[in-house]
Length: 101
Image 1 (cartoon, rainbow, N blue to C red):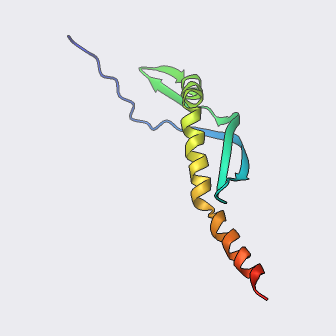
Image 2: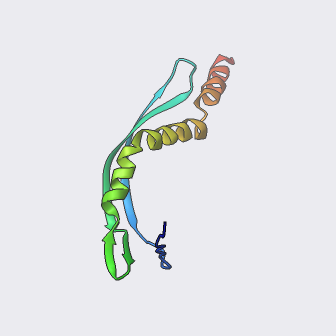
Image 3: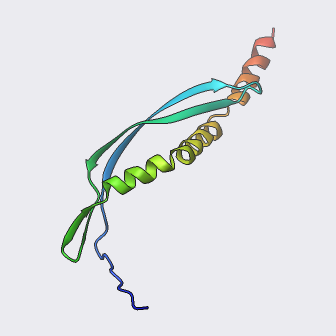
């Protein structure tokens, strides 16, 4: 089987703003948890590719990939929020401090 390889030597550039909404709450072990969802995707600069003189806008397949992987993306964001802010440590210190005379 003979195949044709097409290669793009120019990087594809894009600018996108993804707005998310996160509900933050404290779980029963006093740790911070988040439930995040993607609210809006706004393209500042569309990702465009030129192959063999044909311009292609990659926005639709990229948006589809984002939507298809939304659960994985927001799960990673939620885990990062929980790891960045150690609420349990803060609450424990406050509890000890208020117990002092």
